[in-house]
Image (tube, rainbow, N blue to C red):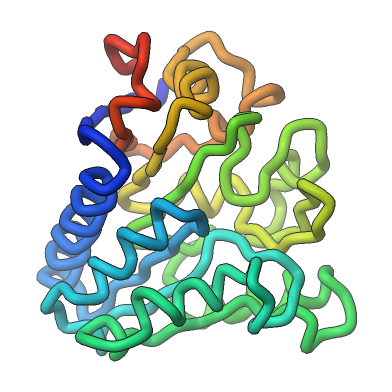
Length: 241
């Protein structure tokens, strides 16, 4: 059974600060143990604030490989692009700009399926292991229980024989890491903010919850999962399961 450890923040801004400090601490530890560290990040408004703060942390960023856990199949300059968000936050200026960013190839390739295959090849070139092992996997949690682009009632959550696939959600095609890769990370962090996430977070922490309804339950690393959440998302949550 997956074990979860909750760390609370008073509000979204405090959560962003906590997330930046926590990610930096885990990267620092990984870089003490290995020549390079591999980091996968999620999209979202709270993460964007956290990544801006993270980019100011004084780490040997030139030894960090940054990936996205998922990406919308849109142009890199589209307002909904997670890569664009990272370039405007973590990678914009300051120490974090020295990180090696490996964006998901999107509309530069003819189909989402080809983009997914190309992204898988890029990951395998950089990350060791079968499945590839990230040092740190930062994930969001949707109100419907999805994480990365593993949406309920779609095919993507069922894919276990490859490292990336095409996810479809909220009217867009997306490229996403699959559950085996999400689960292989040395450390998984869920970043959860806002009252709209109360039910989804409760379901994630419920040992009896079905991953069919809540695909975030498919993330089952060997180490405990760290959940960073603000008070609004933790209403009614008393313990981790």
